[in-house]
Image 1 (spheres, rainbow, N blue to C red):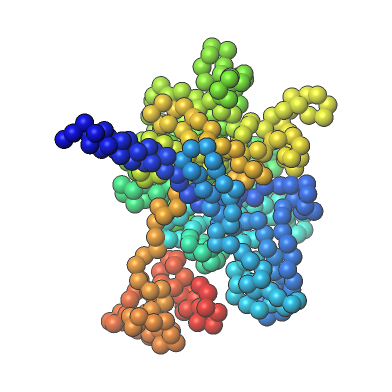
Image 2: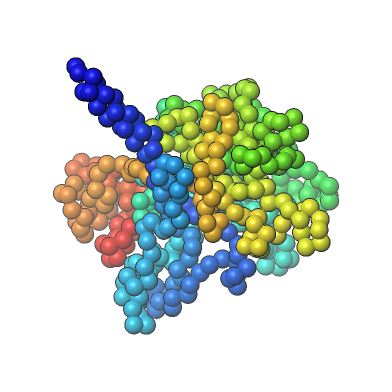
Length: 463
């Protein structure tokens, strides 16, 4: 081989390596709603009109599914809705032209994930914690629970690719569904999460005794985070960690090797270095800290990792790995700790809704090296967009194979499938039908609810 040819081959190889290193990623996510003084109720929404067919007010909202492009270097695009919501697709000349699309668009108003979200088998599950007022006393209680309970969870399931609403249910506070994040372990196919455990250790005789909670200082139980698995069909968690951890965890993610990591919030007193990272008085990186968990025992794996070098807030944020690089965790987090000088010159938590002037909710995309724990701010994100859950495009688990609704396996979905499904429910005879395709609502066992979902699909053309 001549010297020139050798040089040419080396140059081509170098160019290929450079392109591989500079290859960017597309992140997708579930929008995490933020409050804003510019809107009357604190959240963006556009009222479209009253749909008389659906008997619903239709809105276009900021919630929904989004994507964000990173070029592999320093440029990150503004997150945009994906799939896009266009009013012209369902509303024109003062009237609704497509009721199914109008319903789909307004259903994003329900896609809150303030307590966690996960994609598994092509289904997006969102969990929202909420409070409810008692109609008589005005106290915040969950119907049927004791008077100390102020929270219950709204669990909704969606198609991960298009955001079609599949189901919605209310779960009680004691299900402990609030998490710092959930992720699928590719090694065993199970869903794990860092769940905030409360009221788990008291017997029902105490939990159901209103006199116990009448005491002003009564403490129901200790509370903290624990590694758990979750059954998404039953929405039941199983605790692995023998005890509880009391750090303010803000993320949870599992890489392609089945290793689990979480970040804490960062609020350590520190000064800003020339590299844009924060350091303590000893010159060590401050800010959020990276923990690794053993998924078999639920215990923290001891290590000597550094802090990431960036401050963050005590609020749920999103993190994920790319299957192509198990050593880099991508974190979509806050730009700062949320602290600052208020209008009176005091160092305090800044108000939520004045983010445009006080900078409390500025956000960034970070890269965290799990071998060292150190972070790198890739780029700031305009308009403080933040995901409650994110993943790399194309790497979420797809829906099970088959044609949904094709119960009789004739490669088409028609009224004949409704008949076949009803026959199965009446007789239990599964000969000639696909039970996978018969699971039309994609949750739990095959029931009359699947018949209803299939009929709705045939009427509207939308799952």
